Each structure stands twice: as structure tokens, then as C-alpha cells.
Amino acid sequence: MQKKDELYRGKAKTVFLTDSDDKLVLFFRNDTSAFDGEKIEQLERKGEVNNKFNHYIMQKLEAAGIQTQVEELLSDAECLVKKLDMIPVECVVRNIAAGSMVKRLGVEEGLVLSPPTFEFFLKNDALHDPMVNDYHITAFGWATQDQIEEMKRLTFAVNNVLKPLFEEGGMLLVDYKLEFGLDADGNIVLGDEFTPDGCRLWDKETRKKLDKDRFRQGLGSVVESYIEVAKRIGLEL
Ligand code: TMP
Ligand code: ASP
Image (cartoon, rainbow, N blue to C red):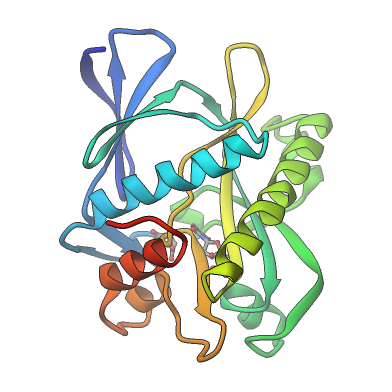
């Protein structure tokens, strides 16, 4: 497999074409972004840590029967993935109220949500990722109703795998964001990444934040916390 031209540069990852039409390389950079790119810093080892973390989680999801984009770890900061036609929405499941839900609805941070909630956001930094619903998604042709149902089903299936995994490591999976795409056969496949950049994880006892909120809120020890999370779920980095 030969890495070719850059296809797309996101806020934290760069996507490269390869000599194979249906494969891409994800390069995890050290760039760390918050508030839709308003705050960006380079954090040493973050690319490597997130690349290996993502690969580890995606393997767990594959083992549970959830199809992912990931093919193989190529190097410290690179991963070979299947090419997907990405659906431009973010799927967010929340087990506990935090972040934008707290601001939007005035509920208390830490409130346990029963059942967990599901929200769609449009992936658009200029518009600050506005919340959208099924009707917007079908009306604008971003996905069909069947594809919407499949994204919801898979996003909750991920909860069933990862909530217990983090709980065994003494952590609460507060919320997380997933992105899906279509493979060459039209199947909905989990793409992008699952790392502490795109979820909230709290220590079960102390409620210490172990995810990107440390960066958003200037709490320090960002990458160190990601490494601790990895260790607690059986990944030594
Ligand atoms: P929120 O509370 O800001 O809506 O975020 C909910 C979860 O989704 C949280 O774990 C962070 C993640 N997320 C991203 O990874 N990228 C985004 O652009 C947004 C809006 C949320
Ligand atoms: N992922 C978005 C950004 O990079 C939002 C966030 O995580 O705060 O700016």
C-alpha cells in the first residue's frame, strides 16, 4: 500500500489517498481543537495516543459485530481505513447530562439520563454544528430514513459495548459523538474516530474529567489523562 496525495485536512486528522481506490490513510496530528476550531494547540504525543486508542476501540467494536472503517494500524500516527462516503452529521448519545445539553436545557451537569438521549448535529464549524433532526436530514438529502434508523441503532449498540468497558476501568462514559459513512456496497459503517477527543469520560468515584474537557476548560494534563484512560481499559501506551 502506497500513501498518495492529501485528500482532506480536518482540525485534528489529515486524510490521504492511497494507490488503492477504496482505501485511505488517516493521519492523527497533534493538533487539538475546541470550540469549532477557535482554540487550537499542539499537544505532544496526542496524534499517536489517539491513533492507537482509536484502533483499540474500533477492534472492540468490530469484535461485537459493529462494522468500522478501520483496516490496520500503519504506524504510530497512521491508520489504514476503508474509503467511505461520509454522512455530514454527528450522532451524539448521552448517558449523563454535560456540555451543550446543560447549556441548552438548563439541566444540572451529572444528571443521569434514563433512557440515554440521542441527538444529531450538522457537521459545520461556520454554523457551530447546529442541532438537526430526522426531517432536516431527509429533506436536505444527507441520509434516508432507513439510514437514519441504522445510525441510531449502531450508535446505541456502541454504548452497549463501551459503557461497560469504561465502567470496568472505573470510569463513566458520559457522552460521545460518532460519524458514519457509506461503503461501496451502500452499508452504513462507523467512520472517523472514537477517542477521548470526541467523548466525555469521568472517574467513577471522584468525577474527575479525563477527556477533551481538560483541554476545553484549561485543566491541564490532557494527553496524560488520555494515556490513563487507555491503561484503565487495558491499552498500554
Ligand atoms: P456537546 O456537549 O458539546 O454537544 O458534545 C457532546 C459530545 O460530542 C462530547 O463528548 C463531545 C462530542 N463532540 C465532538 O466530538 N465534536 C463536536 O463537534 C461536538 C459538537 C461534540
Ligand atoms: N470538535 C470541535 C472542535 O474541534 C468541537 C469541540 O470538540 O469542542 O472545535
